[in-house]
Length: 155
Image 1 (cartoon, rainbow, N blue to C red):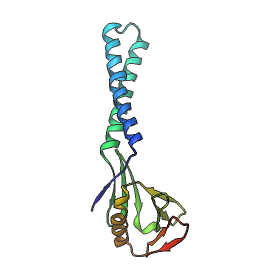
Image 2: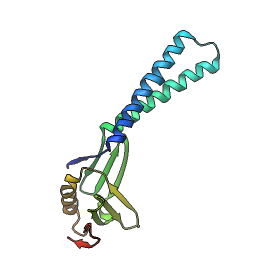
Image 3: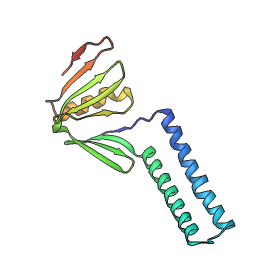
Image 4: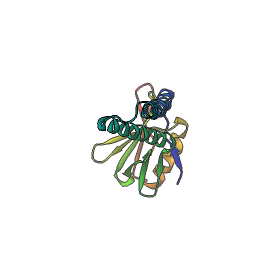
């Protein structure tokens, strides 16, 4: 079972790192500074400190887990997406087709219940991902849309 790392754009990656830095410096650092210099003068101020610290820690943990542990895994029965500590799974038996849109460079899984999901991995991994998926269920149709608007059926 191979793992296919989720691909984030450079902008999303930079924004996530910036949000982690703001949560650490602004959320935690500034709150601790205020706790030391202002103190707990009222109950409301104490509650505010606690909430700011908890939200800051939550943001740091969530974004760090998303950056570190976001990937797709193909098991014998499911395609599993780990997005940080959030897990989504799609049954391979429910997949009707896989479509590669070459013009937009998107790989899409279509399911029996008229749902779909876009696979967000490196484009170099598309062929390997598709081969592994098709090896688990040979009834899945594989199509490719070329940039001139025509469809090529491959399997």
